[in-house]
Image 1: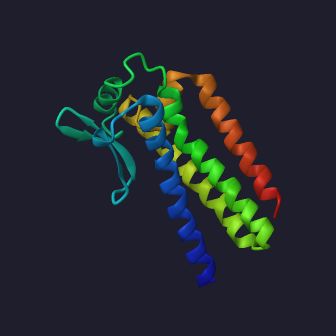
Image 2: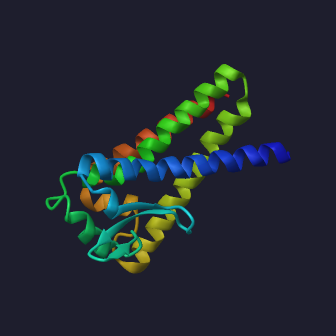
Length: 172
């Protein structure tokens, strides 16, 4: 039981890190945000990708300031949907890798844990984002911001996430 909990927690840390790295990579490579103006903040709850707005670092929790910082590099928000969805897409790709390794190595605990942790984290992210959106009246996270940008892209992202995770879990 302790071994399973340790595996679950380690996979959870990996998935959170990969999710944030997805945003970071798209911010750096596609949007063109310089290294000195984007950073991962992992020792905070929630973890996030911070952007520099002038002399001040901002988090997505102050979404208007965050969007202002983002617009410095993508004024017409051409890549905003990619930036917002990059975390979930990187996370899903990582879960596929974990499941593949688990199937090849015949270690179902790893694959099951990857799918479950990813699903739990995304559900928490989705519902806390929705709750904060309803409470505050403005975007607060990936899903509400993506929905404001493109409701169809949000629907496709959620369908891809749920379908892939369902299919992956069925392998066990």
